[in-house]
Structure formats: structure tokens, C-alpha cells
Image 1 (cartoon, one colour):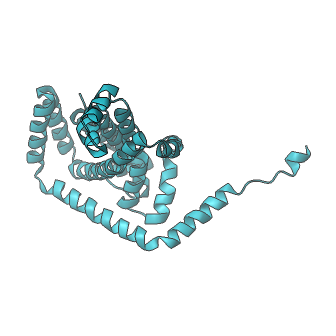
Image 2 (tube, helix red, strand yellow):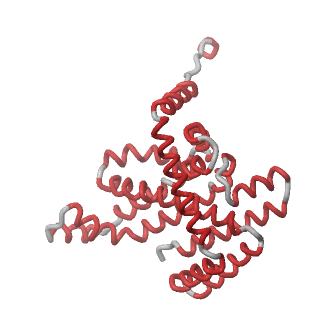
Image 3 (cartoon, one colour):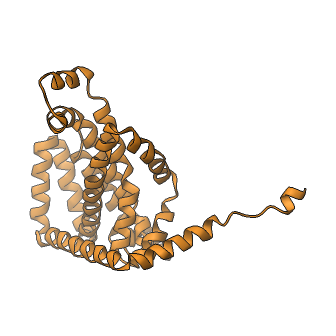
Length: 275
């Protein structure tokens, strides 16, 4: 058919590639500064966590789990972390924990304010909604391409890709929590003469905390799900061991590293919950 024969492909991919190249050239110094900041921050966090003796770290986390979730969760935390220590995966687990914590902190600091703005501004909500849909549906491997171009190989691009991947939950659940604040409370706050800031931190945020905490929880889980994928560009940690096991078809190594990731996910999930 003539319209198929003379159909011209839209140069979408080439346009995006040229745009990314131009952005990399224009903001090269900014990307280097951000990379340096993240590298030093992750190194400082990992150094702090690694400085604590493993048994003391396990004991402190066990006490925290006991105070927050009860003795059953505390027992699981202690036994599972002792298993990780026994398997020789402690240093890799600490590195993975540092990456997850850094990505979660950054995603939360970015996501919660955006969620608040979404809940109070229809224009921002309309603009961010398709962007968040795109971020949640695009294949995770695609995140690695621009991160690799802007920041090269190493931990930093892995963290950047993880931040982008884990950003939607805190945004959406913060928005949802504020939108679900009872109308009666909003009207009562206005009746007492509360301004926007007072309404936010005295009425809306306290009532939205369960939803916000759930957003942080989901952010942590999504960050952990990126650990193995981010290891493809040098993020390190337990994900690197999984990739090594995959490359060498080493079932034992893959099982141990995968078990370490699962244990870390369960511990963080149990400790960071709204209930």
C-alpha cells in the first residue's frame, strides 16, 4: 500500500539521544559535582555502618526490633543477621544497606514534598501524573542507560537509577494520604484560623503519616529490587555476587547472595511499617 511504502519513521530515538548528549555536555560540571557528593556521602554512610562491630550492630538492631515490633521480629533479626555473618556476606550486606538507605533518603526527600505539592495544586498533579506513570512502567534496565552516560560506571549511577526507580511510591502515597484527610478536620483547622503551613504540619501531615510511612516502606522495597540490576553498572554489594553467580552459573553463590537480599528486605519491611 502506498502509505506504507512512503511512511517515514519519526526520529524519536535519535532525537532523545541527541538531547541526552547535549544535556551531558551542558551540565557536565554539575553532574561531576553531584557524583562527587553522592560518592562521598555513600562512602561516609558505608564507613559508619562498617565501623560498628557486627555483633554490636546485630544487638542494637535486635533491641530496636524488639522495641518496635516485639520479640518474634527481634529474634528473626538476630538469627538472620548472624546467618549473614556466618556466610561471610557481612561487608557486602553493609554496602547494599548503605546504597538502599542513601537511595531511600534521597527519594523520600524529593518525593514527599512533590506529593504535598500534588495534593494542593491541580496543575502540578496533572503534570506529574503521566511522568510517574511513565517512571513506574518503563523497564528497569532503561534507567541504567542515562545514569551510565551521565555518571559512568560505579556505585553513583546505580544509586541514581535506584532513586529514579523508587521515587513514585513516596510521591503517590504522600499525595494519597493528604487527600484522604477528613474534610471535617480541614474545616476545623480553617475555622480556628490556621494558615497553609499550620494546616499542613498540624492537621494534614499527622493524619497522613500512615500513608507516608507506607510510601517509605515501598520505596525501600523498590530500592532493594534494583540492587541486582544496578550491579550491572558497578553498584557492588550483594547484587554483584548475584551477577557473578549468574555469569559463572554458581548456584550456591547465587542462593546465598539472594538469601542475603531477601533477609535484608524482610528486616527493613518489618521495621518500617505504619501499623
